[in-house]
Amino acid sequence: MFNKAITLLHMGRYMQSLYTSLELYKINSKDIENILNIGECYYRLGNLSCAENRFKEVLKDDPLNSMANKFLKKIRFKSK
Image 1 (cartoon, rainbow, N blue to C red):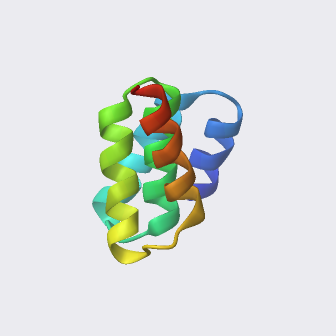
Image 2: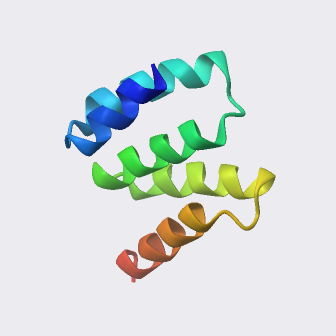
Image 3: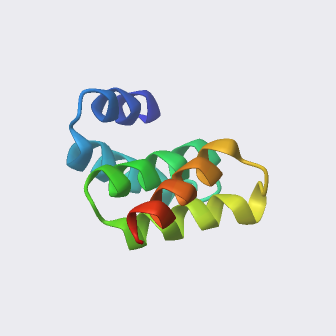
């Protein structure tokens, strides 16, 4: 199911990817890769506050996560 969410993301089908990832999140809320996917979907859909929350959630468990840090920088830049 995670592979499906990633494939949908890469196809630009962000809402479908988000829905799939949120279903996975209900099963395992600690899966960093899935949380990153949720954050990226929110980012691509323009929901920067939800994206920011997900990336911060990742950084609680993995403070050096490069993808989460990269997206947070993008969000801060867009928010200026």
